[in-house]
Length: 142
Image (tube, rainbow, N blue to C red; front, side, top):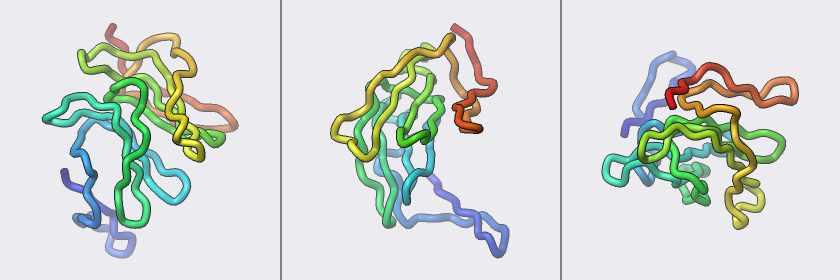
């Protein structure tokens, strides 16, 4: 897996190998919160779709509680003190409607399933705006 960083002065992308992810993956979700980066789910060439999560802080990746559901092509956000994971696809490529969340200040409690989306979606855009979580686009093929 190649990790790139945009050099703000030169406006060039440079290879960054400070600390590669512990589990190589594609089709994952990533967000920033606190002073770090959280990566969740995705697809690993050997293990397939995963529910594992890693948090990057102080130039190192550490394990974070795994999600309840293995998912790839999902979206994630940090909203009102919680990390949320939306939809995606499971290991049989079935699209998901599930939404789960994690309180990162009490991560021992782990992720919890909170509700379902009205239809299964993957590869959607997501943002928080005006005290709301908004999903845009995506693919629904089930």
